[in-house]
Image (cartoon, rainbow, N blue to C red; front, side, top):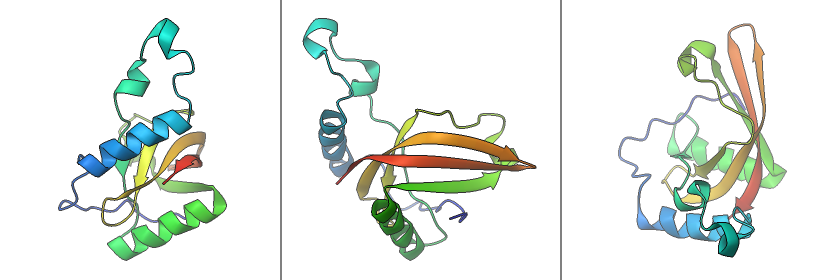
Length: 128
C-alpha cells in the first residue's frame, strides 16, 4: 500500500461530521480513563489530524476498505517529504475516505526507514 497521499483541496477535513466522529472515537478508545480526577486531557479535547490516501477519491475509498478489513495498514513516502519531521509511534490520526468522511481512528504502530523511504504502519483503534 505505497500510494501517494490524496490531494483533495475541495475536501474539508474540519466539519461537523469529523467532530461527531471524534467525540465517539475518543470515548470508545478510552483516551481519558480518569476524567473526573484529572480533568480532560489535551488529547481528548483537541482532535488529531484527518487525512485521506491515494491518487483519487476511488483509490482513497479502496485504501480505507482494505485498512478496515485488515484492522491495520501502512503508507510509504520519500524521507524528504517529511522534512525531518518523521511520524512517531503512538500518534493518532483520523483516516477519511475520498469524500472526507471519517472512517477510522488509527494509531502509528511502527516507523521504518529504508534507504530514502519511510514506511509508516498503523492499526485501527476505532472504526465508524
